[in-house]
Image 1 (tube, rainbow, N blue to C red):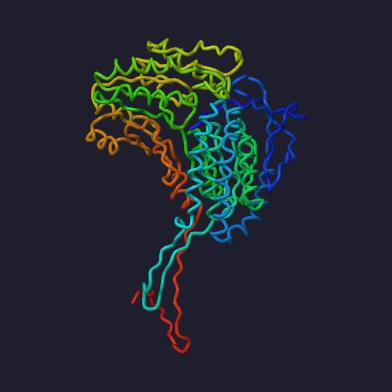
Image 2: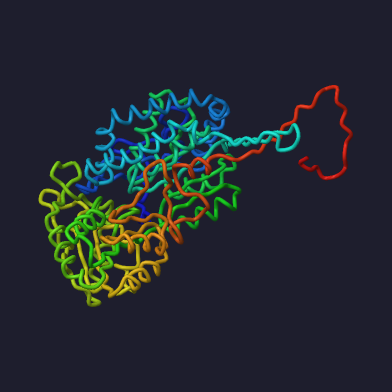
Length: 514
């Protein structure tokens, strides 16, 4: 879901700007490594701060605090847990704008877009406020004479989440509220690109009354990730990122005896049928392709146009792209902000140039965009390409930028074949006025999340998020009911209360259920 970026060279010594620290056992700490890495404001291209880089020692400190806290937290009543979670939800509402501004400053997305991700993440918080429903057990009376059987789901202990830069609030919120509500202690390793949101959330948890040590944040890069995957005190790891790293995380976690759910990359397609409302489809596809500068795991970088829909759709998409205003994320009139790093910008430029050199036609070309007053920002304009072949990176790679390619086919059958040929299976959409075609698509398409006239089919918080094929490694999707099952382990209890005066002869035969 995120693209692996080149990491800036760590810097030692005292940073000239504020340093984002770790959060362990209820307080900020710089850690023992002394290493930091710059944080950039993508809108200006300037260094806005530094982030501390953790190592195995930092992770071990967080694990020790989490283990101590979880022993009490895991035994706390559901009523007390949900009281804290309700308070946390209210605090997130109260501080919605402030958190959105923090995200915008480090990620580059607009403040309103950041507030949108907070709202979607808050849905998971609302789901876990009713965790008593998800945690109810099964019970069978008299499975055998005088014998009852019931189930329990108990917390794993200490669990961890490794999250990407593109949703510094929402993706962690898919993880830690569910894990914490289930009675676990949680260690978050956010992206080093935009780490401040995680510390802000940690402070809100503390204000809500969450005991110190139940929620911890370890900043850093690969060193911190490997330490999490190798630490014996961590029982499970959730990950969202690129497919190669998702595979690595799952394999290394399993090799170290941990549960793993690893959500990987995406290259989502939208089919547009000739009977679709073309104006509506164009506006929705434009939103899916260019919202958050295309840096969403559920972005919509490929439009598959069937038959006569091609020319009208391309014309409508061109109008939608050309009316978007690109600028700094904190400007009220900005529709689309910058991408996260210079490398991200260069990738979009390279993919576009490569495709045009190979014969693709630029419907809209955003390569030369300059935002006045922000010439050093990491900007690239909305770009639409036609006549792209399936072997080009602009089509087959996860772009993670504001680049939309239009693929032309003659029939629905050819469209579904093209969609299903992708190694990714995160999400897919169709725009049509036919219920028959929509129903067929929902069955035919090989993707975990499907949209019918919906460009970004991200499930609400009380369902679960996850893809197929190279978009998910592990058995469980994220958040919702499947998230609760991932963060708990099942136990079956068989009970009999014989009368004390009754003598029962021991039997060497395997017990029956009479």
